[in-house]
Length: 373
Image (cartoon, rainbow, N blue to C red; front, side):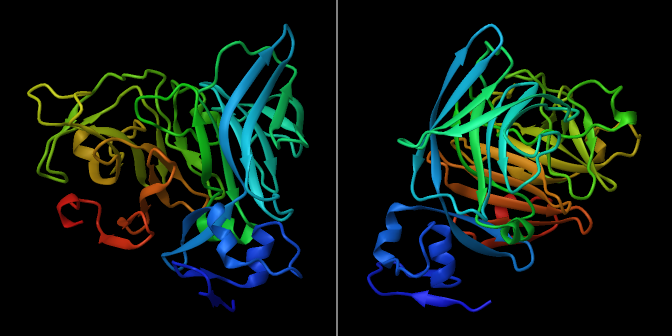
């Protein structure tokens, strides 16, 4: 693809694939020149191109500001308040999602969400991806808010409302999924864990307790499941020194994802307190290992590496397996910007770590890497 560098009138040099591509992202007729100085008001994002390990910058058309919920005996209307930056390009890929503990309300454009209808609004079971109901999505012509209406009475508040976005299907192929672009917490969980799409549960998995161990299939995007408790019980420990400097507690009430011969799940790195756990000096981590006893979960001796970590001071975390089988852990700061992006390749047992600018700062096996950054 041909690239041109736009430097005039910019304090920082911005690189775009072409003027036409930039105009397409902004929803502007490509026959009209878009002055580079006008780009500053739009919100940039980046993803890692899985083919090149390079960051790709793009611009999001909207930010989530808040949510209103109106309920009757047989109907619920959600007004998602959006800050609009530019019209949504017709070839772009996006979702608007409202997440509850056991189900998701979603409107999708140019992408397929498991269990969801092709148009309108869908209410989908989180584990099982069963379609519960369908409704309508309308956009307010004056303020640009999205109004999602479903024929289900929902009294409980959701956890989070979020938007995923990429400019094209080609970007989705390069990124491995449609990443989170903007979100607004209603009830933030202790991990800051941004929930993923609904997942199919196959017949031999349905008898497991929830959340389950999900067996990943190619083309499926799976968020690593967590239990319902905001303060989960801590299980057996992976003792510090073998793969990590500190002890790491397993979380038996969580679920996991099986990718090939690897198991992916959450853990809690222990801090310095004599009896640590939720004391402010610990950190959530992503774990990988091999399920030697066949129970679908990791035991301390089965853990082989750490593939993601919540940074000091906390963050919001997106922990998922993409449609190609790569495992991602993305940290977002308080403004929704990427703090760190971890990508683990289960087939080669290699971890890549990218800093907040998209620069790769680590590429090696997933053991004892913290002191090497």
